[in-house]
Amino acid sequence: MNCRGDETQARREERMTNSDNIFEQDIQEHSIRKKLEAIYKEYETRFAGGEFVFGCGLVKPKLLLIGEAPGREEVKLSRPFSGTAGKNLDEFLELAGINRDDIYITNAIKYRLSKVNPKTGKLSNKPAVREEILSSRSYLLREIEMICPYCIATLGNVPLRAVMGDFSVNIGDIHGKPAKIKTEKQEYLLFPLYHPASVIYNRSLREICRQDILKLRELVNVPDSLADSAQSTLL
Image (cartoon, rainbow, N blue to C red):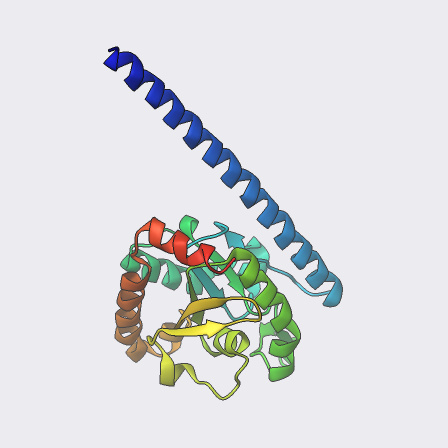
């Protein structure tokens, strides 16, 4: 009996299987990215003239982060969560043991919300109103279903209300409390968080945010096989 030959053949078959799986994953990821691009193109047409910043990161991730809307720095760099808010987010992700490259990050509203300062004549960010959240909501839900994350973490009231479709909810009441939510086609684990910029304006929230991030770490710290299984049941 040629044990070495059998072992070598088994290894070859294992490598071939792994290669086939990687190739299949690459095709699937390429397909998802093309579909996301199509959604973003539709969005650009719908809201023509806006300063757009679209989502980026790993498709089919364990974690999807959803912010409110891009600001000046995000538009400048064409990247969600840049500038000071981005630095705070990076600190939170580090605390959670999460690599930014391993997640997908997007915004509920994908164009800059701005107003002209009457004193300086310069543009400044403005908060989203109900109509702006609702008009972008269908695109966000399609984006979520395409990415199909294990867990969705909303950052602030705007994405929380956009995802839930409920304008009575308040981040101060349900932050750090995981819940199941259902879109038209799928069900997800939702984890509401304060927006990273909140600690800039209210330092007392820093410890609360830290505790919530530690809870998030426990939620997403599941074996890939379990997360993949949960995602596959949603497809």
